[in-house]
Length: 220
Image 1: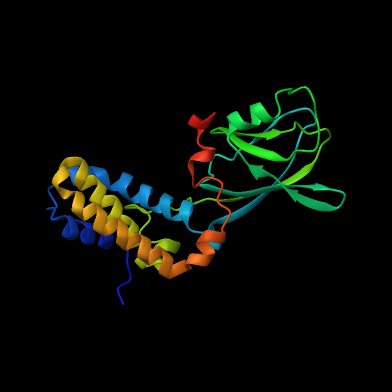
Image 2: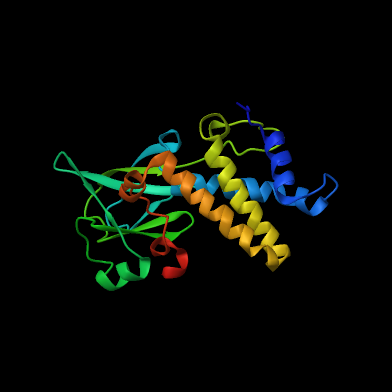
């Protein structure tokens, strides 16, 4: 079994893409290819090793709470009331403004939206200082010349290679639209490997706030 490293993966991608080592365009694209592929895996797949719980306290009358800068995918936000946790439901920011058009009126929060890169918005604005837990996924050890291995190379190499192939194929299409067939092939392979690794039920049941358009900033 091959012990995959960053250097070996780059060589593998060159072979798959028919690129020579002196192809500077391909070399320059490698950081983006790897980061995009790794972020995609963490965003779409509920890998427990990337999970983080972060506690905080809502400020009474303030309709926003901080969003950590290292969030790749938000899984849940729940707050404590009466000794029990209550989970907030994700909605677009514009929907929150319509559903709760009087920001000066406070209550028990029921919904959450991505407001911007550093902020979530809740509605109604909290009527007291609720303690909350934010569950999310992050990934800090991106592969590169100085980071030859990480949890993806060690535990999920097939998934990583599938994601890298799909992303590298996108690079080929950007250069030459005639390579579109390769993109479809490698994208289908990525989806197959993803389902094989985690199973359809787990992927369908996972609560991933940032996997769809509903949380995008443009929705506001």
